[in-house]
Image (cartoon, rainbow, N blue to C red; front, top):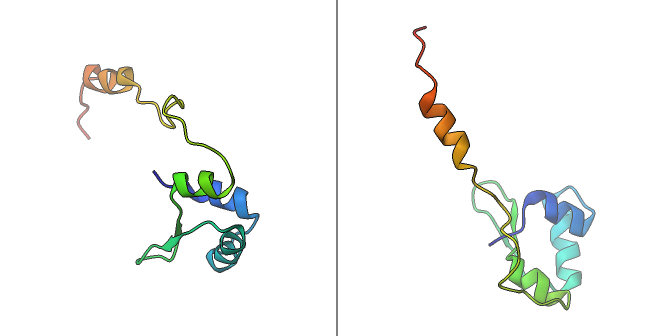
Length: 81
């Protein structure tokens, strides 16, 4: 998975992708630029490895899907506009 834009800003302490790229390069973290908007793409495993950490398989999921939110939408009657 990739780091979020917010995580990249937090890691680099920079707002602009060009400046973020310079900091990532100094940290030895490989990255790519998204072809459509120039946002940096950083693999989470690469960042962890470059910073001396270790990825674990038992890490909690980053996102949680709430099934009840979908079920609630099905229960609500459609309203005519």
